[in-house]
Length: 391
Image (cartoon, rainbow, N blue to C red; front, top):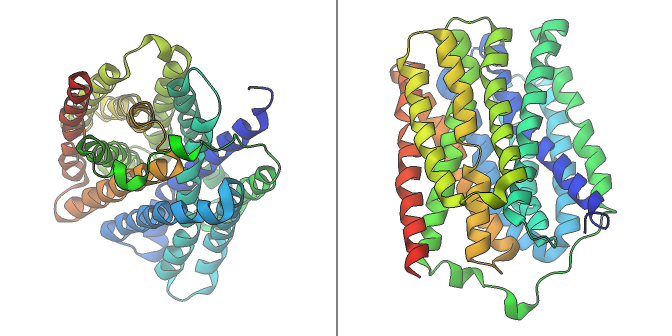
């Protein structure tokens, strides 16, 4: 399998890096956007909301798109859209009078491509023959984290070299990888689809209460991760008074590295670990990390807890995908697209809620309020695991 589908796995990994660029680049430019275009915290939070609401729409549309174009055509088109969106992000604000509108338009385009990649790449990996699907899924999502870390380092250092006024070159350069990966997806092999008799219709899945619970947990997973990671850069600089380079490297970069480490470790040793128990432990650690970031006055310790939060959320998203794949085998790309949609609902609501509360209080309070998501994750995973044992 590894030899036959090696190029397919590589293309999916590069797709994860593309997703990392899409979810990371805007927050790293928040301070630049705020100072250059006089944007409020709520407007910045709304930009994140636009990003993930668009991805949510793409998740829904991906179900029909795959039926019409197949996985190959869908993934190729998604990467092309992402590349076009990045080019627009680097050019439109330079020519349009309403800069915020330009940012919103470009965000919609690249986010639609990102959402389609997210909704389909996991199902491609799950469809490949393997006796360790949960570990393989975790490895796929660990690449997303390393992509985040690489994006943070490159963007932070590049801004320092070329200056914030030339930020648009970063957006233009970010179009190169998805453009190249679109060409790769035109050639890689895909695993045969499941026979119709083994497939579970989406309508049948939606009648299962435990599956509906899984969708809610996907939303909690996305919110737990993004409510922290999307605001970590601004929180470090404005809330903790840490210089931007140091804040980005010790805040969102450490978050991404430890999130990737958690997924990598599970990818390597996942066969020996009970996934449900691991998710419960992750939810508990996430609660502790949110408290550490917001309640401890030391900037250094707060940033350390920000990194710990990355480790705590590492298994939430891929873990829920794996649990559902195991429990509802045959759900196929439609199931993964629906789960990605609810994950993106969480990715939208979490950062937006943080920004909304922050505008009426402080960013510290906004992040603290978002502790509700890992708390819900803890309760929900316990119920999900109990229902499995009762079957």
